[in-house]
Image 1 (cartoon, rainbow, N blue to C red):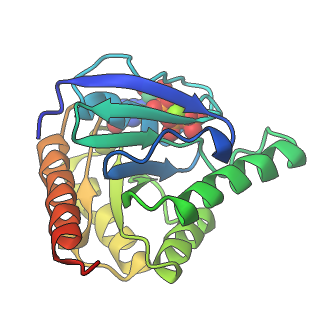
Image 2 (cartoon, rainbow, N blue to C red):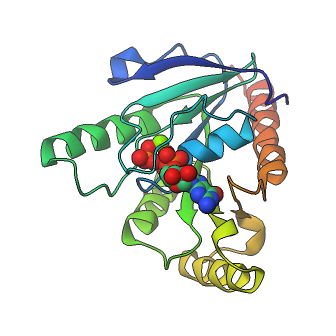
Length: 204
Ligand SMILES: Nc1nc2c(ncn2[C@@H]2O[C@H](COP(=O)(O)OP(=O)(O)OP(=O)(O)O)[C@@H](O)[C@H]2O)c(=O)[nH]1
Ligand SMILES: [Mg+2]
């Protein structure tokens, strides 16, 4: 898997606009401002191919990036952003949930959670919703660089307990220090392999 050859494909504001489902897709979800776009930039070794901002609500469309002929990475708008009006929020939610439910090439949703805080209801709801719909998901606890090693371990254990998962089921990450980046690349590479195998063994 070569994460160094990545190009922008499209910004999608409605489900009719989705690009052809050519490759397995990894979508990146999480609360507004948690660091979804920054995580993708780190993953693909680019400073700012994916637009980031210190202000929440930066990403407003589904942004598709192609890891050359291997994967689509999909940067999603954040949830839980208080400053957007009701109509806009329900449009986003409809777009995100419609995409997640209908996309046949969706291989995994990386759910990005701020390591510094207790689990928010919106994160729990997102993960429960994905599990209910049997959509594979990988929790990633980010902004680890903002905490000491001790605090990182303590916070990670608290989030694991809240989500009822084991340490092996999630990753620690920092878009600043690069912590967890290689582990995330390796984890995503397994989704590609799994998808390929499943396709090969499925009967017509
Ligand atoms: N220290 C630190 N800052 C981070 C990290 N990840 C993101 N940030 C900062 O957090 C802010 C938000 O980052 P984005 O990547 O734009 O967040 P987002 O989740 O894409 O936000 P929306 O598109 O608005 O939903 C920016 O100021 C980033 O520099 C991290 O791992 N460590
Ligand atoms: Mg963003």
